Image 1 (cartoon, one colour):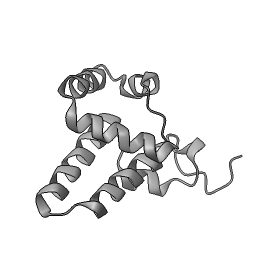
Image 2 (image 1 turned 30 degrees about the vertical axis):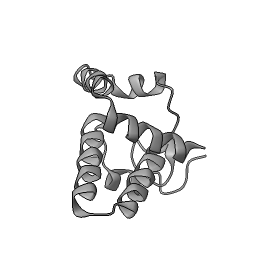
Image 3 (image 1 turned 45 degrees about the vertical axis):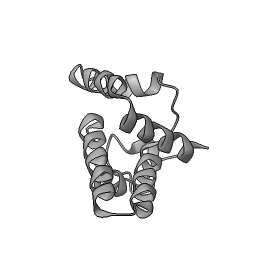
Image 4 (image 1 turned 90 degrees about the horizontal axis):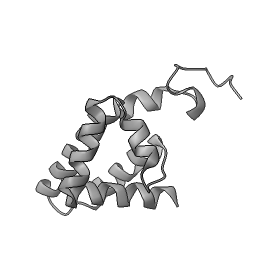
Length: 105
């Protein structure tokens, strides 16, 4: 399940400094989407944002919630995309090109 993959990705980012460093290096080379596609994790952008929201809902205190918010911000910077940008698109296939108004196939 893709949401599970997104949650696993976030957990690895939390725990694995070398993995974070590799992601940052890819972002500096403007190849983060390619790096992510080559990883073992399979999820769409809406699914990663859902995973962050799910994690926020499960936080037991403000400190845990702040950590998730920081990770979400980190991912947004590396992916060069925000949750709001994705929500404004009508479909996944036109998300990078702009809003299709629901007319693309």
